[in-house]
Length: 251
Image 1 (cartoon, rainbow, N blue to C red):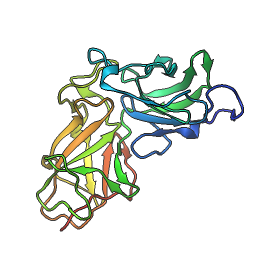
Image 2: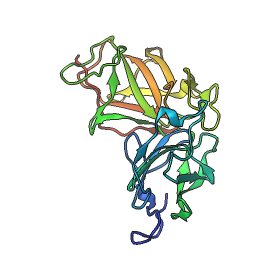
Image 3: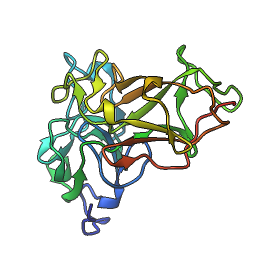
């Protein structure tokens, strides 16, 4: 990724390459087609608006939100937009793109911001977090595991991620997933607890989160020999999610 020239005083969308991050861990770097990204800057929108169910027509995600005039072009393809504000935009990298170098540009009405570059990879895994050091880990009933209510050996947990790549069957451009679909490279996915890969049979599902654009979920049964509050990472396609993130668990 490279930075554009500073444009903070320009009367148009203004941002630099370092402001384009993965929405799960908020780290700049490579992204994957189909993953959720955030762009930070100034002058990105006249208003603040988050996507609503009424904005999704026939299961197709919008490329602009009502009355905002905000478009995000990734490799010249309009990206599905999830949230806009004057200083932040959340969008989905179009899943019909191929790995490689692409440009990202915000257009607000007729005012275009700078074109910045990003490298796309087949997968760029990142876990969504409850806080700076804890991954979101959910019970089958939808409640969260916390320090006050930790998971135990043998419990099923659901983790949420983005950037796990294409699925089988594949999603169409801008399609909102309505049902489960495994990631295409599920056989290569490794889930690490304290740096050690869990047995693949402990992963009950790794794919799209139905009803949510760009979101992946992983259903994991914790091993019997789990240690308290283990560090958790995802490894896929040569990339590993950042260290230092744990799940609330009791040995």
